[in-house]
Length: 442
Image (cartoon, rainbow, N blue to C red):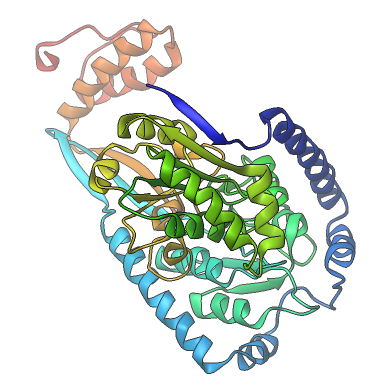
């Protein structure tokens, strides 16, 4: 087996250096927000967005005014997309059930799925206002019945982006803020004089937003590390270079550091795709961005078999994986590390990004090895409970518990069990001793 790189991305050392710069900036910025609150947030908004309104939170009138600016056709398209996302999220929610089971006579165990009580949903703006991110975070949290949903997005052209505001409001946001970048994420997590902190942060963002979420994790929950978008095309000669190149550049246009990778077992397809990328970059309106991503982060990897392609793909654990081969279902059965799969040439990553119903907030930087993407279950916490209904069960379980606690040297723990054995089992267990075995516990 062999792997040949026909095109390689920048060296890992250079990427690590960029990451370190971002990390330092974010650390200093979050410390400033925590120390100075609203004043620091306002300074950052003025610096990066030229925006300093009386209040960053939109009033009901401001929300209505923004929605009135949205073309009726665009509103209908947003409604259609949200209907698909809601339908899938509701089906996912229905798959999560509370349980209660009697594991022994008189012993009841169970769990409940309880919504996170407040969530901050970040919706990227900047060069490309990500209207769809509002559906993916706000609407999904609404399906999970989160009681307080805060949504934030940066200003575009000096004001709230009308379609983003519409999507947030239609998705079920309770509070909408026109605020972007580290300052938005920091304000939602840490709180300010005018914004109560949330319990969880969700949503994609640039490298700075993703790093801010990473540093805030622990103080608040996060959905996952969703940094600059990644796309991978796994293809063989059942498809052509136009499809492959189009799908690579469709995600490379996100930003200047969006990795795009092709894995194939066909040198002919690989070389034709490289040429087709060059052709498309000459006519793509967003080529200024896409070309830099492709130059610095693009890769084309030639493998000698589908088994090798699978191994490489699982090792890389990319966010979006477009599979166009003669064995797409085989990849579905065998892929273990990715954000989302797009199977066959009829679908594509843009469908998932905008409309088809699956969530587009997905793990990046190999996080797909240990987590999936944002979904309704991310907004739910599964909490267990127990009860014992009979004296006999209390004494019997207590005996085992007593001895197992003493096995580990936890005398105080053992006494929690022993007191139940004494009260409900009528047995005089010496203080600080392990409860001896009884016939009832055997």
